[in-house]
Image (cartoon, rainbow, N blue to C red; front, side, top):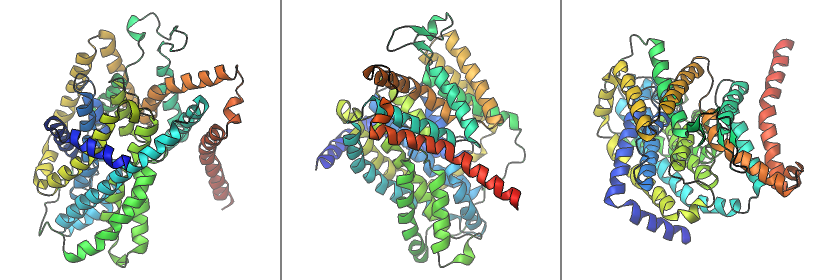
Length: 499
């Protein structure tokens, strides 16, 4: 009952004119960003962080969430019409969606993607609203040792999940943790790793790192690839609407995709890519039209797109209740909270209850806006693909530099932005993941503080981390997540040698 009352209060706040405008701007930008290949929601939110630091916190966070949902929607458009996923999570959609477009059924493919996204996000947002208070009740009982164990899980799983190898993920994480040590120590008041630079006493700004690694790094990476002969989008032919048969074949894949995407999105090793592949494989096994898979099966679009958008809502559960990001976009959104001195976690639902319930309510509104935007405005989104890449990424670099300087007018900040941008380019070039570095900078100081508090309470005895069952289990899971990939890799190598 309390959840419904809080949700109604959230709707009262979210339906104000200013918040509706923020939501509309967010979903419009998010859809446009999702359509453009190579520009994801994480890059866009990172780009807007320095621009929105003086705006209303609630409105800005509503806009960021709208961008997240919109980016998940928009990625399917290029996957279907261009065979180039706008988002990594839309890779699976391209397998069947592009085949449908080539067969003259681009309209139904786009429709089942949009409606499936709507259904999944609607159901998953209800799950977010009702599940979050339960997680909060558990999390408020955590001690410092529990928080350290939880963050250890986040560090290991994010490092192991993102990138081509766990070692590269851990290297990226170590860089972020090192940056998190820069500045004045919260417990002793001593300056650490500032090298005599006064501007570093407050630490490294998360916004500067996020904008540098995501925006500047991506722009340099695209410029360095010299893309030639880009593929032209397939025009939408025939009826844009779904037939009764299309509805019948899409309904249960939408529901199954939602049930797969939401819980996996909330896991520390989740993300949207895993549930989309699981959904596709499940639909391929259950479908009565096996012969159509690989040639344009509508189930192969409906299920993965539902899983994709359900995972976005699932990602917000650990972000809001525990302060743990399970995706690159969630990591940048965490930075958005922190720039307003708001720390996601159990106390968020107490100290900023109005804000968090308005945010959850706005997700329902944004979902309706996205359905209205996506179906009739397909032609507009396709035209965005005609923007020349030099103009697009040149504008991104200019916008990133101006926003960072406006937020922190300092030569040191600008030099760090250039340095992080160059590093972001090198990390992409050599296949090092970006997200662990952001997570390390954000959660590193918190993990350091919680570990030291736990050791103070035990008078320096590290066994306190294993004496409490909850923290011992979490540390065990983190160790397992770190060791398991190495064991499986070794076993597979032994089998290949025997063969």
